[in-house]
Structure formats: C-alpha cells, structure tokens
Image (cartoon, rainbow, N blue to C red; front, side, top):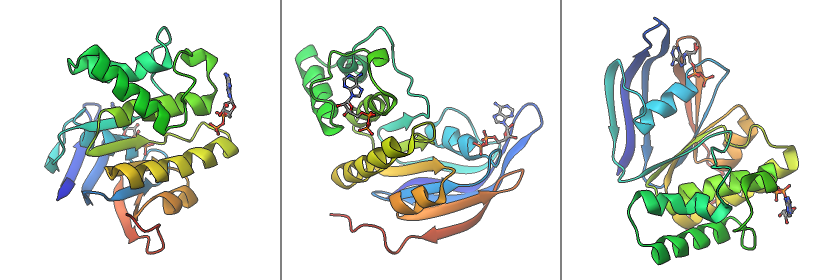
Length: 218
Ligand code: ADP
Ligand code: ADP
C-alpha cells in the first residue's frame, strides 16, 4: 500500500510565494521517511499538505490512511488538563466511552514511559516528558500515517537521544507510516528507512536515498 503519494505537487500561497515545485514522493505502509533540508525549502508546507490542513495548487496528492497524526515541535498540550486527560482527548473526540478511552490513554502513556505521571499537568513535566505526552496522544489515535514536524529540535541533546531511541522502538512496534522532518542528517539517517533531501526556493526534492543499514523491522 502506498500510504502517501505526492505527484508533481506545486504549492503557491496567496502571497505569491511558491513553497514547493514539482515535488514527487511516496511513503509506503510501514515505511519511515525523513525529510531534511534548509529552512524555507518547504518542509512544513509538505507536511501540511500530507495532513490535509492545506491544499495543493497543482499536481496530485493521495493519502491512503484512516487516521493521520501530527506531532509538532512545540507540543500543543492543554495546560489545564493532566497528562492522562491530554491523551484521552482523542477518545473523547471520537465519542468513545470513558472506561475505554481512559484505558487506551493509560496504555499509550505507558508505551512512552510515563506510567506514574498520568496526573501531572504539562507545566509540571520536563520538555522531554511533554514531548512524550504529545507522542502518546499521536499513538492513541492508532494512526496509519504519523507526521512529525521537527519534534526533537528544541530538546537538549541527551533528551533528544532518548526520544529518538524511543520513537524507533514505537515505530517497530506500531508500524505506522512516518514522515519525519528534521534539520539533522544524522537524526534522519538514524531514524528512517529512507531520507529525502529538499533544497531551494521553491523547494524541490534533490535526492531520495534508501538507508540500507536501518534497523530490521519485525
Ligand atoms: P521549512 O519548513 O522548510 O522551513 P516552510 O514550508 O515553512 O519551509 O516555508 C516554505 C516557504 O513558504 C517559505 O518561503 C515560507 O515563507 C513560505 N510560507 C510558508 N507558509 C506560508 C503561508 N501560510 N503563507 C505564505 N507563505 C508561506
Ligand atoms: P528524557 O525525556 O530524556 O528521559 P527528561 O529530562 O525528560 O529526560 O526526564 C528524565 C527523568 O527525570 C524522567 O524520566 C523523570 O523520571 C524525571 N523527571 C523529569 N521531570 C520531572 C518532574 N517534573 N517531576 C518528576 N520527575 C521528573
């Protein structure tokens, strides 16, 4: 299955800025693809198109996913809600019963190592832990496609290393298709099965490189 297909996509904003030109790429089911490139080459625009938050100007886009999750650099957590209730919100929005959605939220928090922190509010948690809550909220949606917009860019190096290892484990476990934006070539190579390099203004795909030494998937 091709979870995400962009075919010759061009994106021009109302301001006249052309952010993407002739971008063609695919993400297959179970594939974790990174996109690296300098600021302004259209990486975030690419993710917004993939998520359906924005429309292409020309070209084709196809998203074959029942559910898509988005993880931002700044975790968009609700400050007045506990970690558990931040994750539970996904079940609430889907109209699931309280016991059911609470169990799912606890499981997701456990997967990211936050058992024992369910009742803490975001401001009581470290940056790494807030990112973990954000990832748990993405996972609890059981996404077929997960989109990451430079999620670890603002974290200190040690926390980032922990989260990278964590995400790799979660990806192997859940096998969602992933599209991961980063400035870091080493992060891209470490995490993904394929690295797409973008460059220029408007942004174009200048390389699409399989990572042959990525970890075997179960
Ligand atoms: P990156 O994520 O690689 O830094 P972006 O996708 O954020 O790049 O931006 C690509 C280009 O599109 C930039 O020139 C940026 O200024 C422009 N851009 C992004 N979003 C908008 C918008 N909503 N309206 C107008 N221009 C935008
Ligand atoms: P990482 O996310 O890289 O594992 P963190 O800096 O987020 O590192 O946290 C390291 C550990 O410190 C956590 O696993 C937790 O046990 C503890 N910790 C961090 N912040 C808090 C906090 N606000 N309250 C209690 N324990 C905390």
